[in-house]
Image (cartoon, rainbow, N blue to C red; front, side):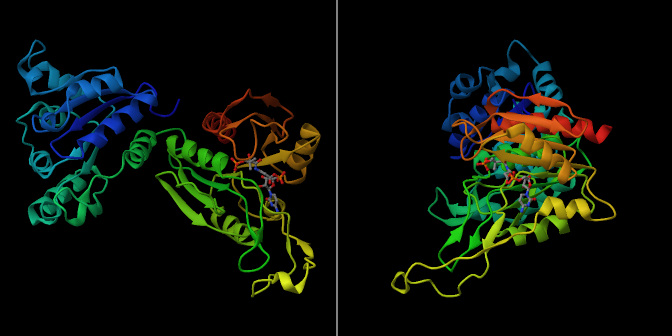
Length: 402
Ligand code: PMT
C-alpha cells in the first residue's frame, strides 16, 4: 500500500463532462487504500450518479440533498475537517469563482471553506471560460492561498474547440495527490538521486548494445521517495515509462552520459539509489553511418565503461550520506553482492537473482536480498517492485538516522 493507505480524501465533483474521469480517479484512490468521500454539486449529478462513486469507493457520495438531511449542519464541517486532502476534479469556472471568494452555497463549497486540508484543483471548462480574465484572477487568488492547480491541458473540448480546458488525466492527478500527501514525510528536505533503466551503447546510428532493464524497479524507487517527501532527481536511460509526478527527470542514453549526470547531481544529495543497469562495455567506436550488411560481418571491439559507483567511492569530499547499489546476478548471488558492497563502498546492496522468471529484469515483481555494510542480511519474499521500493526506502530512512 502507498502513501494513500487510510488517508481520507474528499473528492469534489462539479458539473463538467469530465465527470466521467472523476469516477476513474475515485477508483484509483480507493484501490490504493484511501477512504474516498465524494461530494457532487447538483450540476455534477446531471452528468454522473452518486451511486457510481459509492460503488467504486465503498464510501458515501453526498449531494446537496444531504446538506439539509439527517446529519444537518455538521456534515459539511465534518467532511471538511476530517479530510487529509480535498481534490476537486473536475473544477468548473463557477466553483473556482466561489472558492476564490469564500462563497459557500452548496455542500462542496461549504466543506472546502470549513477545511484546513491541502486543496488540489483540476480545472475543466471550455477554452473561452478558462482564458477569461475573471477565471485567471480566481486561479491566481487560489494559488496565492496555497491551492495546487493541476492543468487544464490543451486538447479537444466538448464544444469542438481545440484549446486549454481538458481536465488532467486521473493517473497524473493521482501523482500530484501522492506528492501533496507525502510532503511532510520522513524524507522531507532530503535530496534523493535515483538511476533507472538500461544504458544504450551506440554501434551505429541504428544499432546499440543494451540490456533488458525496463526501468520499473528504478521508477518505483523514485515514486516511493516522492511519497516520503524527498526531492527526487531521476536519471533515466531510455524506458517506456512516465516519470512519477514530483521527480526531476534527467534523460541519458549511454553509460558515459549516466556517469556524468550522476557525478553532477549527487553534489548536495543525501541519497543515491543506483538501480540502473549500466553497460560495463561499449563499442570502441560508433560508426557515424549505418553499417551495411554488404560490407560483411563487422568486427566490433569493446572497451570498458567507467564504473560509476566505483568512481564515486574514490571522490574525496562530500558524498551522499547513503549510497545503495543493486546487483543483478545469475549465480553466486550473496558472494558477488558482498564483493560489490565492499569494493564500491556502499551502505546497502540490493541483490536480485535474475535467474528466476518472476524477479529481476522486465517483470512487475522482484525477490531481493538486502545486504548492508554491517553484515546484516534481509531476504524479502516475492513482492511487487513498488513494495520492494518501499522496503528499501524504509531502510534508507533508518540509515539516514544512524
Ligand atoms: O529495470 P527493471 O526491468 O525493473 O529491472 C531491475 C534491475 C534488475 C535492473 C535492478 O533491480 C538491478 O539489479 N539493477 C542493477 C543491475 C546491474 O547493473 O547490476 P551490476 O551488478 O552490473 O552492477 C552493480 C551496481 O553497480 C549497480 O548498482 C549498477 O548500477 C552499478 N554500476 C554498474 C556498472 C557500471 N559501469 N557502473 C555502475 O555504477
